[in-house]
Image (cartoon, rainbow, N blue to C red):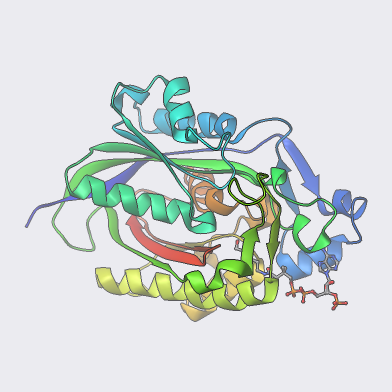
Amino acid sequence: MTLIRSEIVGFGHCLPQKVLTNDDLSHMVDTNDEWIRTRTGICTRHISEGETTSDISFKAAQMALKSASMTAQDLDMIIVATVTPDNTTPTVAAKLSKRLEAKYGAICMDISAACSGFVYALTVVDNMIRLGQIKTALVIGAETLSNIVDWTDRNTCVLFGDGAGAAIVRATQGNGTAEDTGILATKLYADGSHYDNLIINGGVSTTRTAGYVTMDGKEVFKFAVNALSQAAETVMEMAGVSSKDVDFVIPHQANIRIIEGVGKKLNLPEEKVIVTVDHHGNTSAASIPLALSENYHAGRLKKGDLVVLTAMGAGFTWGGALVRI
Ligand code: UT7
């Protein structure tokens, strides 16, 4: 049986130049390198100095297009997962369409699903491709979280970073087995009863400001380990594979203890669990595409590898995707 699938054919990323260390933070709030390292696994993060979310997305997009040997003229759709857009409207996707000189009619949309944003966007694109509505899409996760971090709050300011990751996704043909190249399964979830547990506490129709990120860290932590594992297990089950068949898992990069907890629950050895939180911090929607691109271009992720992506964030939202690169 032949069927339409979507495959990822290019990866790109961009990190702002400025690196903020834990020691730097210890001069800003009452914290220290030891606490941050042991409680979160974070050593450094990149911070934008005036670069907007669309600026770093643009660079990530150019790299992804080059890696796919394509131009923006090949794109039928641009989708950007972000909670830190340049403007309330239009979308970051529309700004990229202008800067990349995408073709007339290419669909533009942003998607707001916090740290799950890239997996949500990838799922939307996978479904549109499989329905034959589009053939090629640019999928981006990008954040300048430094703009919505309260730099006087030690509970949150040590956790986040800025960055952008991009993937080019295009239609291909498969035969419906787990040997196919491309996106083999996706599954999304949400539970709005946790609306207040992790929130950027401003907004157009409430405070008319962007607000600052606040969260019940312990509640998020507990939920995250189970949600990330559940989404990963579900997509493996949907495709009829087990964790033994998987080459890598890329969990959302929020805290090394959450990432290790997910690896254990999935029975995966350490070397199959990709970690970037140490040098990226939590970059929300950018964390998974950044990890994908960085590891692909470093040669660690290779064509043919079976990779589980799993993410969880504000909402709560969560979800997974199983991809053969
Ligand atoms: O992207 C998805 C969303 N985010 C997450 O997934 C984050 C999930 N949560 C976490 O990663 C962890 O809960 C945190 C890293 C946020 C906090 O770790 P924790 O082990 O849950 O620490 P805690 O909140 O229980 O705080 C322990 C202590 C507190 O002091 P007391 O009350 O015990 O005296 C805090 O005030 O650590 C203190 N503390 C700090 N100390 C030094 C909190 N932040 C800091 C800090 N430096 N930056």
